[in-house]
Every structure is written in structure tokens, then in C-alpha cells.
Image (cartoon, rainbow, N blue to C red; front, side, top):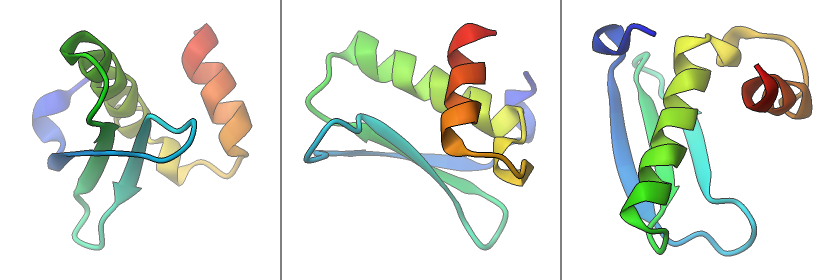
Length: 76
């Protein structure tokens, strides 16, 4: 995982619902990672690592369902 080649910013926000993390690709090629602000620091770190894995695996370039990407992320 080459983290030094990735331009990103992290925003802590309060999600309303079951979502605890989201990644948005930006027009300039960077990414914004949104993480649930009410999680513990350890949980936030886990969500950050999960988001970075999606970015580094080029998941945003793949033409498959989000559900498939998440299954692959959790079981590989």
C-alpha cells in the first residue's frame, strides 16, 4: 500500500444512520475521507485504514457493486 502517493484529507463528521465512514473522489484526483466523529480514536483509525485500502486498491476505478467491493475488503 503506497500511502505517500495519495492526496487525501480527512473530515470528522456526525453521520446519521449506520454509515460510519465514506470516501469521495475529488475532481483534482485527491480524496476526502469522512469518518464518524463519535467513534473512539481507535475505531476512527480502523475506519481510516479501511478507507485508505479502498483508495490504494483503486476501488473507485472498478466497475462492480459497492457490496462486492466491501465483501472483498473484509474477507481478503
